Amino acid sequence: MEANGFRPLDEKSLVEYIKATPALSSKLGNQFDGLLIKEVGDGNLNFVYIVVGSAGSFVIKQAIPYIRCIGETWPMTKERAYFEALTLKEEGRLCPDHVPEVYHFDRSMSLIGMRYLEPPHIILRKGLITGVEYPLLAEHMSDFMATTLFFTSLLYLSTTDHKRAVSEFCGNVELCRLTEQVVFSDPYRVAQYNRCTPHLDHDAEAVRNDNALKLEVAELKTMFCERTQALIHGDLHTGSVMVTSDSTQVIDPEFAFYGPMGFDIGAFLGNLFLSFFSQDGHADQGNDRRAYKIWILKTIEETWNLFEKKFTTLWNEHKDGTGELYFPDIYNSPELQLLARGKYMKSLFHDSLGFGAAKMIRRLVGVAHVEDFESIQDVSKRADCERRALNFAKMLMKERRGFKTINQVVAAIQ
Ligand code: ADP
Ligand code: SR1
Ligand code: MG
Image (cartoon, rainbow, N blue to C red; front, top):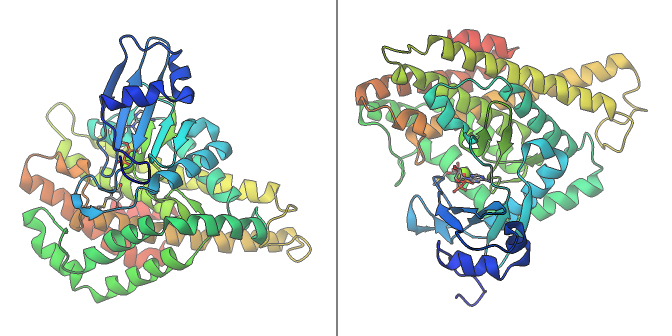
């Protein structure tokens, strides 16, 4: 036990912890016979245990004071669990259909107890690798992003409430600094943990020598560090979403803070683009993945288009409320309101494309790669897929302001 009351648990010691914690033991109906506990953490940072008893179940997630996928040589605050619990509760309040309920939080143990997203829920990224279509994905993710981003922005909040929330989440500085490093800096310089498929060495070097790209990423990094537009999830890739054919659940918001909305939208769209480019590496004689690639592109289009529609509808519904930015006595005609919304959404669209591109590049030449490509066994095939993704991302970051619609972006791929 550390002085501050923290001790890392394992499958055995977790049983005693559960028995001593009424909020958890009651979820199991206080029945401990035949309790099944399994560590399933396949993410990069934490330990995750599935706990299933005869009368109930939950998931326990514990942060340890370092980055799991690297080891103790890269220390990381375990206070990230506090921001994850806080955000799960806030996003769950705003969007209960798409966020697992928090049952218990223990700050000194950096431990969260939450709803077990039981099978057939799987991580979206894994479903995309297998080639499964999720017909409600765009509908659900646009719901999640529109509600969580709108209701935490100054389009809805007064600066009094917004600044209070901003100041609380400024405490998540270490996780923000991790993103600043691994998304916006390391891919553009020689760095200890950077890696890439060997065939891509020259492509990685070209990224480091691309001055136009570096100037663009500087603008995006500036926005990430300076802009407190809304409470963002902060790591909204396809590994942070669990799905079935009719359920979509967003997990893992430990990187949350008040930042630019486009970072969330871009993370999700960018990871769908990565999935698109990985598909040729998963094609086989039984399935050439052509139809599946078309489904991914359609989902990208629908996600943005539905998001835009839902976000502007919320804005219109709340235009006479307490939001600080567009007072109705100033923006006092439908024409002016339309112009204001058009301007805001255009800039959000370009931010999202830029951040999406940055999130793609970091997964190809930075420290943390994605299973979409890593699971392609044939290295030269993997390199071909990765190179196409990288070239598209570089173009997207540099040319993003030239795109007016998401359909144009998708057309640029084809
Ligand atoms: P990390 O913060 O380390 O990235 P994640 O929150 O992504 O950890 O969780 C790691 C894995 O644990 C997920 O990929 C998923 O398989 C599983 N998991 C996490 N939360 C739940 C949950 N509420 N229900 C079911 N499985 C979960
Ligand atoms: C060492 S970087 C680890 C990455 O995993 C998390 O999911 C975040 O994306 C972070 O950048
Ligand atoms: Mg994660």
